[in-house]
Image: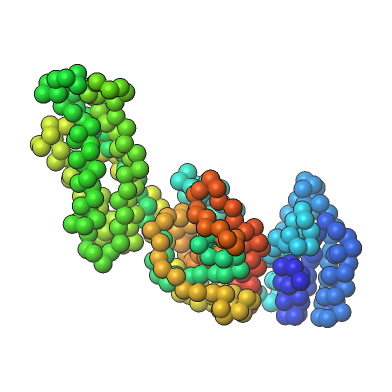
Length: 355
C-alpha cells in the first residue's frame, strides 16, 4: 500500500471523509472503493495532472473550502506525484499548515518567511520539520532531545599590513604571516576560552592574500564559521575572536578589521512536540525504526521558527546500501524513498498531534 493510500485508510478508520487527488483515474476508483467498502466514509476524488496549472487552482480552491488541508506526496500511486487532502476539521482541533522553505543554505529563507508573516494566517502554534541524513539507512529515523543543532555564525577578518618586495621583508608589515598566526590563535577559542563541557567549533575555511611569488601584499583575508550549542559559549567565542584580532596590532603591527555576523540560533527540540511525534513514527514504522541520536554542530534555519513556537526536527535516513555519502557533497546520491518516508512520518505525527 502506498503512502497516500495508507494515510487515507488511517483517516477513514477515524471516521473522516477523504479527498483523493491523482493522475490515474482507475487507481483513484480502486482506492476510493476500497476505502468506502472498509470504512463507510465519503470519498471525493479528482483525476488530474499535478503539473497542470488548472489542477493547482482546483487544489487551492479545495483547501479554502475546508478548514484544514492535509496534502501528502505519494509516488507509488502516481509517478507524477499525488496529494491526499483529508477533511480533518470535524475531528481535529487545529489546522495543518504546509511550509515550503526556500533558500535554507545560508541565504536566510526562513528569516524572510517569518518577516513576511508565515507564522500567521493561520497562526502557527507548533512546528514539525525533517532533514535527510545519509549516515542513516532509508526507512530509519532519529531524534535528539534538547539542543539538536548549533548556532552558526560567520566571520570575515581582513588583516591590513604594508606591502613590499619579498627580498626586503623588514621594510614591510607582512599580513600573511600575521594571518597565519591568527588562524592558529583562533583554535585556542575552543581549548582555552570556553568550558570543555560546551561543544564549540571554530573553522577557518578560506584564507586569501597576495597575487604572486615575490610581493608581500597589503592585506590578507580570513573567512570562517563558529558553531556552538550554548549561548554562553557563543558569546565567549565572539568576544575572544575580536580580542585576539585586536591584539595582533601590538604584536605584529597589523590592523585587523573584523566583521562578525550572528547567523541562525541553536535548534532546540521541544519534548512537547518530540514525544508524540516519535510515538507516532514508531506506531507507523515500528519501534526499531527510530533511535535517539547525538547533537550535531551543523546549523539549520528552521531554528528561527523553533525560537518562536515549540518545535521538533525529525531525522530521516537517506543512505543507499553500499554507499557512504555525506551532505553537501557533489557525489551525494540519496535513496529517494526517504522523501516518501519523511512525508509519511510527519503526516502520521500531525494526525496524532491534532486528534
